[in-house]
Length: 332
Image (cartoon, rainbow, N blue to C red; front, side, top):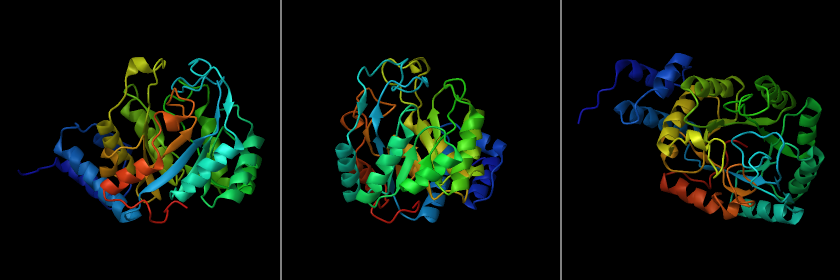
């Protein structure tokens, strides 16, 4: 079999391979490639080669701990933890003992980071308290995943022991959420200003999102120098208002992960995909999120007993795809 790529696509892939800046139109051209085409497989191989050259064989695992289950009044349409979804009737705040146990287990299993996720109304002082407690308990780097913050609050996160913060301008921001894009970006700038490492993903991707919307957020991640970015697909929990749109496949995710990786060029220290699967590890991803506690993608209050993948499962997928999760983190 002779593989002949379209010359224009081959030129774009050569730029990506050399970590040259792609244009928006070039990224859109890659996004439009048919999934069955030789060009898509060449795209994925190029992105994979770039990541393995940049990140080595490291497979990253950043352990997600959802601190609380509560009906959130902000009602982001894709989230199971909202009043509108009405999934959870009981308010649950996981105990300090449980959080410490999860953190110690993650550290023992070689997690590269601890991402502490809260709902929009979770007390910020409480998050700081948990951060200080874990900083004294484990050596794993702490990442906050919380609401929009001020510079003063960013400095407080640093003081409490956090090294990074996850924050995303979501697809459909201001339409499927009540938040303004500008406010989300302002928070991302706060992280840069105070010295917190910014973690990101283009999310939550669904079939209703245009290539233009998706590519726009890829370039946003590059512009603001995300420590890592990638692709997270929307998971439609039963009863989700977004169920009518369906979901993208892992194969489609892999194409997007590859485009995102080439767009990011030499900026990231890792490249993520969620939920964990093999296809995107062949397309430039190397970072997974094992999960326990609350999750906006689950109907189980403790996602470790539901959709969430454990760290052992994530490490096993890394090993199967020729990555080594036991190497030191490139992100921290």
